Length: 118
Image 1: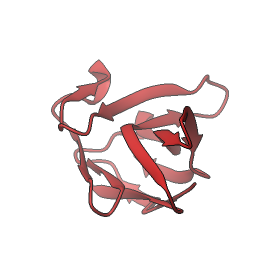
Image 2 (image 1 turned 180 degrees about the horizontal axis):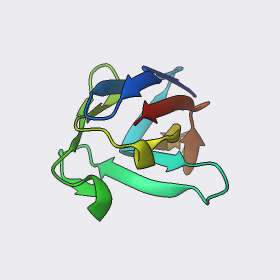
Image 3 (image 1 turned 30 degrees about the horizontal axis):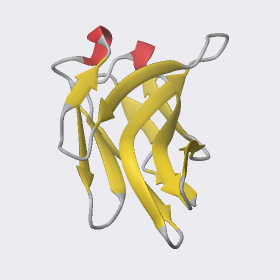
């Protein structure tokens, strides 16, 4: 199973970006999907998660600005980011709980850079 993230870029403060991450492969199932981010010199932190049933969870710093969603048919998770702030600058990673051949494991995408200028 591979996760391919896209959508990062450079945006001015107050702007918007949408990230997407698609899982590909054969014979797998996807459970919880999420987005994490890692800013320079900081630890990776959870941004948002979403279950197959669309229950969502957000870190306090993005509540009201970011929206996570998913398409279970396409095995794709999205992160709509509005009102971006310079402190949102980070490499964003998608994560998925993958079920495959009776086992469950976490899979990470390659990361996509989001830079917010002031």
